[in-house]
Length: 326
Ligand code: GLU
Image (cartoon, rainbow, N blue to C red; front, side):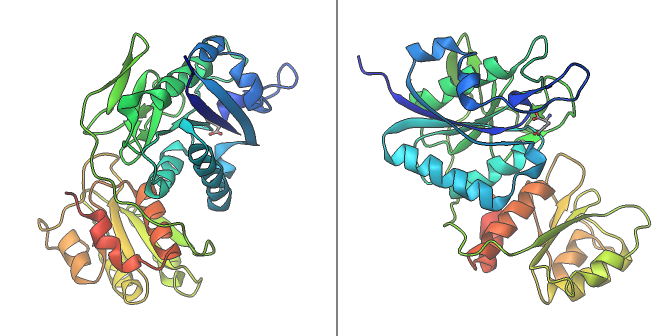
């Protein structure tokens, strides 16, 4: 029987990291081809194409590079790949997953994975995560689910997954909703039905800048007051609680929202923003009145990705549609 085609790309991150010399910190050095040698079982599951598209710590990935990775992934599917797996650093995985998910128009799965322990560490989790990710990418029941993150035997959807622990092996979770599926004895099991995703075309420009600022107690307005002059095209605020800012920030938001889109998310790490509960100055009702939009369940970082992509295809007027929960 002909095995299905699977495409794997390595971008770097801890999964690809090793120390050059004893006592030195780990850096990305392990190629995709070498990663593949740690999962010999894979040759019984698929015909694998592997490429090392980069060896970066994920903090240094950028949107232009991600668009070139997307181009590569599109090409793989158009040329017969059943699924695509990308290995990368976990620090920005929640953002790259959201980025790809808005742009991934195939039924074929695009699966992201990484590791919390480097390639040379005892108990390295990279090989197990990679094998799990490949199983998910090859599974028939993974089709039409967009972009997913596979870590520690769990499957998380791109729009809910967050890195919620800095160093723990179990570093990823989807607050409120939990994983969308899991691997049970090597079998891919889903706990929820796929949902209708909202897709965007490729951005026509990539020079737009969207700032992300966090509300903090007694914060000054220096950065806010200069956002427009600095040339930003959009602003996301990680607000207090259900999406609130101080009175001083509320005034600044009103001025900014007259010129560029302003999106208010919650800095709490879980739960949605409110729409119609609080009426004090700087509350969500006040900020909506002043021209801001509330990010709902989108975390601040994913809200920034959405706004950047919308501005990039001149569809920022559709922000409310993309934020609507239906
Ligand atoms: N813990 C991170 C990782 O899993 C650090 C490096 C990075 O994100 O590239 O890869």
